[in-house]
Amino acid sequence: MSKEDYATRIKARLKELGMTYTDLANKLASPKYTAKRVTMYLARERSPTLHFISAVVEVLGVTPEYLLSGLGSPSPVVQKEKRTYNPAFANESQYGVIWRE
Image 1 (cartoon, rainbow, N blue to C red):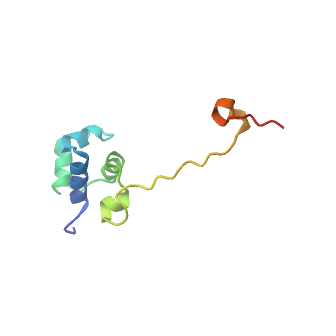
Image 2 (tube, rainbow, N blue to C red):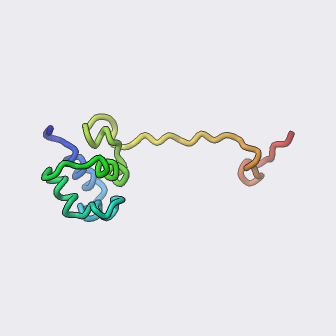
């Protein structure tokens, strides 16, 4: 592993967020990720599973690419939802006017 690997990046992000290993374990989607198991992954005593990595990405708000390789932006790019006009859901309070044919 490189000098700065996934464990180093997770630890740095936890520090930025003011979280502990226990906090991370409590926020992960699976009860099998106890504080002890998180500690083992971050101490590199066990190899992380894909499920663990994907759960950590969600909790810490980073991209998988950044977590695994250090490349790219640590924060995911959030695309704004493209809204289109749908007359079935239009009302005056939402659009200010109702379109009629």
